[in-house]
Length: 455
Picture 1 (cartoon, helix red, strand yellow):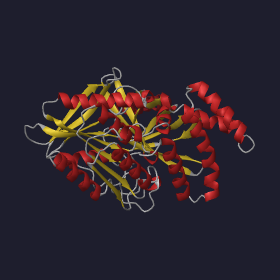
Picture 2: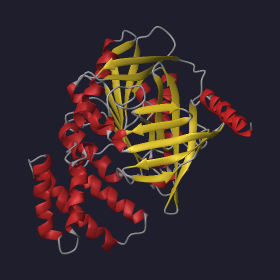
Picture 3: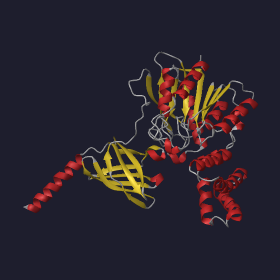
Picture 4: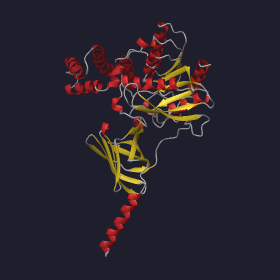
């Protein structure tokens, strides 16, 4: 009788687990080598079962789509093939999953609890909004990938001037979410309240957009952004003669290129590169190492090797495996006495296999910035170590001047980092800790400048 009772109790508990709603936010901490990394999963019910996304706030990863999400016999399984990730967790209590997180053969214990551990973000706009929100979609001009976004419109019939927002490197959603901040949501809110329509979209493989993040190259990003411009031009609520682009970081590389291929009326460049990509990357690394306490001698040693690699990379016309072989041979001759061959080869492979990084390293912004003829507002923070203010603003000003553009305004804003937050050091480690999403000084500068341009 006791055995039967235990069996019956197991059935009852399993039924409770099976009926438990697994959807919603789940958060936990991955602990390894004395470190802790917060991981969040967001699970939704779909017509075909479940779908989920992953956030790793400390690494700036938000809304990363899973390939498969199943919940069978109280066992949750989430797979992200592109990153070699699988999470499996068993529902132990009503709001607790006990399980393991594995990536590329390594496995770690990871228990999840309901909720989301995002920090306070006081500037984040909350509904109801005093303007109209429309969910939109359109097809990339590169391929058949359908991109999803949000168009915010001032109240009224229009037509309204408009801005399309272009985010920085890495997979980004329409809010340009990073470390719990949503800077594009905030920018869209401020601009729309000022009478300017704003289009922002999920990059391919992120949020509601189709495609995969592995397909993202400079060419596909240009095609995706071009589709957004075409959408605005075809919308009768948008004033076709008053369409601008706002690009942050990598988006500041795309925006000038798109401006010279379209009849764009104004540009806002936030922390946009102006110097050649290899020089920008070396300066970025030097500034970061200084922030972390490295000596000039230590920085010169590693940066000297990277400078040689970047120089060879920019000169070579080879691609992929042929390029790897050429670079590996040249570096081996020069540095094999100080750096193991395996490490040199891995470094070369990691750069050549990253198409976005390769495009940035080979970029020469002056070549296209000098062709921009519309009004330009360029802003940088004095504590931005990712795209240093002085060198890049000066290069942008010079390129525009060389091209004869006199409608240019630039500002190096004291104390602001790469995200345009008021910052103590500019270090990326501060991004999550700072509650401010974007300095009010920047928001005011942008909204007033754009409002004057579109009058």
